[in-house]
Image (cartoon, rainbow, N blue to C red; front, side, top):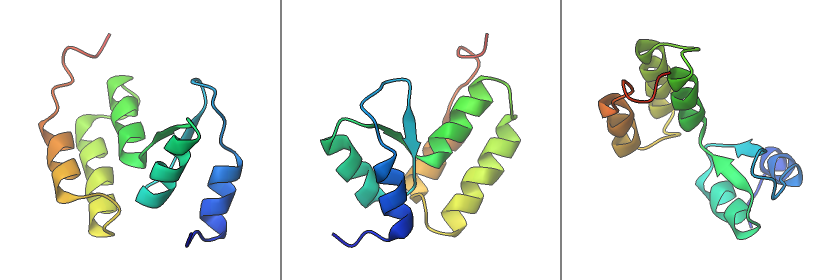
Length: 92
């Protein structure tokens, strides 16, 4: 299927437990993991969660996402959506 050792390692740790997440930027791994009902998120979505939890601020989150975009790990559309997100109603 074209998976490298890192992809295989990520998938080998997958579970159907909703409290357990696989974190990857590889679209093929995300699609494959969803076939097995693994909870899978992109790394930039983890940054978004950290922002909602006030562990990092919006500027840091956007810089991290931009770094991922520079390496083509996320799409321009995803980067733009992260920049436009309104976190005010999500913070406790």
